[in-house]
Length: 67
Image (cartoon, rainbow, N blue to C red; front, side, top):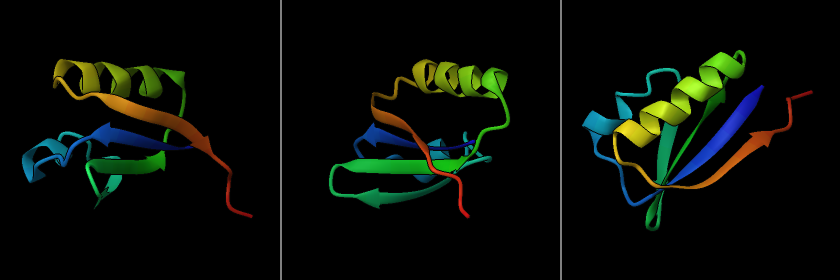
């Protein structure tokens, strides 16, 4: 499964390295992280990591699989 996570504000390089399994880019007032998530366990682990780092998730959505 592929996911896109939009976070409030511009994450520092140090914060983005806390998510090595995800790629990222910055848009105005947001950081967008995206990538493959293998299973529910990894998904919940990501959510815990966002919370523990004090990051505010604006949007979390599953992306369609490429054909």
